[in-house]
Amino acid sequence: MSADANEGLSRRGFLAISAAALGGVMLAPGIRLIEIAGARPPEQAVSRQVRWGLLIDTNRCAPGCDDCVKACATENGIKDTGNPRTDAQWIRKVELKDRRTGRTHSVPVMCQHCEHPPCVDVCPTGASFKRADGIVLVDRHICIGCRYCMIACPYKARSIVFQDITDQNPDVPRGKGCAEGCTLCVHRIDHDRQPACVEACTKAGHNAMIFGDLNDPQSEIAQRVAKYASTQIRADLRLNPGVRYQGL
Amino acid sequence: MKSNRIGALAGRIASAICLLALLLPALAFSSDRVPRPVINIDKPGRCVEDTATMRREHPDMLRHQRDLTVHEGVRTRAHSLKACVECHASAKTGSVLGKQGFCQSCHDYASVRIDCFGCHASKPKLAAGAKP
Image 1 (cartoon, rainbow over the protein chains, first blue to last red):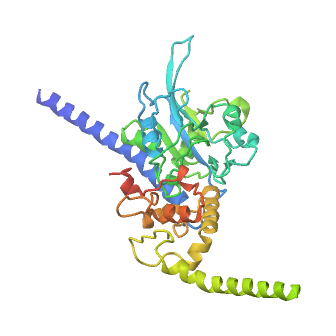
Image 2 (tube, rainbow over the protein chains, first blue to last red):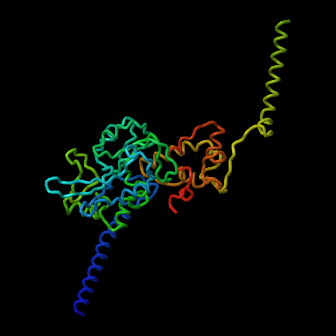
């Protein structure tokens, strides 16, 4: 009896220690790599040496969980205006099912931050652009709201704002008549922080999203991508997105 | 005869113009009939440049800074709109807009439309209640 209890305790203790160790592995390198890669003085321009990327582990992404979507909306000031067909959507959960095997996936899909972004190709004013570190953005000062990028994007990642917006997050200016999409929380990245979705996912203990520099061999994301099979959505288009999915 | 009369008329007009030119500044600055922009500075102290430079060149500074920030990720605070708003937001309304607002008051006076705040927040982060 007492031996059983001891065994139970020790097993529980072991589990706790291993969970803590796992958490350390997940968290510590992630934080470290951002400190190294993002250690850029504020007056210095972003570097081509860095390629920001996201790795999403679909095995850990729970169906019905929308922590990342909520975090994105809070961070970027995306509010429900009661028009779900036209509301801006920077990130959404997509439920997939393999009809033959019945296996289901639930994955967050956002701007995939392509190396060769079609939205940039079609933009008539140069508002849609790729930053040196691989983040695809819209310069709202130049955007004329023509929506070519929305048509060109194979991931349906771009939205247009139909209504006046008030009370924006000072870090995330948004307004009527401009195309927009996931910025990878560029305002946070520039201050050495993780995107809001990744932070929320990690905070909730799902650990389904990893953010980091794909070009830095020391980073957790680069090591994971090198070790495990990961896929890009619509890889056949050869756009080389910075967002990759594991277990899809 | 006729040319004389024209000359006298021209002289009178010239003197009238001179008188008007002398009077104009006095008119403009002395009376309360002329509306003036409201410039409330709640946080006294040095701005990033001297007042004359700021008055004349703030649009160019903002435009230059915005391109650096959006395209190159340079997020220095000196010439950024966010830092302007943080410092110049009214203590009463918490905003740079509104009739007495630092930005809007002057731009209304000069009849210049500000597009900035269609997208940018006109209140600093804490006042907007974004992060309690």
